[in-house]
Length: 187
Image 1 (tube, helix red, strand yellow):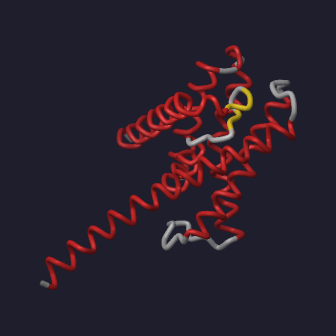
Image 2 (image 1 turned 180 degrees about the horizontal axis):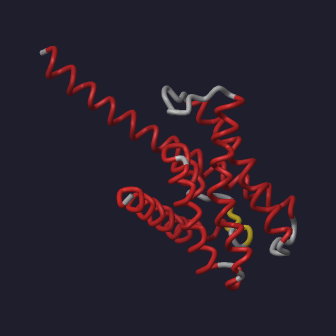
Image 3 (image 1 turned 60 degrees about the vertical axis):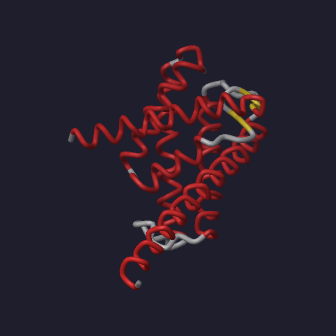
């Protein structure tokens, strides 16, 4: 139980910090409050849910609650709560869709570059539509279509950058492990 709470805490903090980093470097690319042409945390949102499933969704939801409360929506707890839920639920839905429709391995074994692209595309549609529907219902967005399109582009770009960066890091680590393994066992 303590381990679960520790993971949730660490993932929540990591997501929050990436949000702050994204805001620092890319705030000039904001279309409107919470909608950006490049949003790196969306990639982390998807990765956390792909890897940690429910714990990842909870972590993303908690981080979104903090972000929305501190930076957006004038402390409107209903809007903030809905956003927290959607932020964790949307990548969970995208994961579920990819497992069912694209036969993605639930354990993420042998994910190819094209599989990552499919996941990113599904997520970049599901998440913005859910977010913008909620924000439209709450009267917080001026243009559903424009905000959804920009958010989809920002989420897709952010997700692809994060996914391929992590894939690059993992291939480097596994490549290094293979070199070490080959050296130690075959030389």
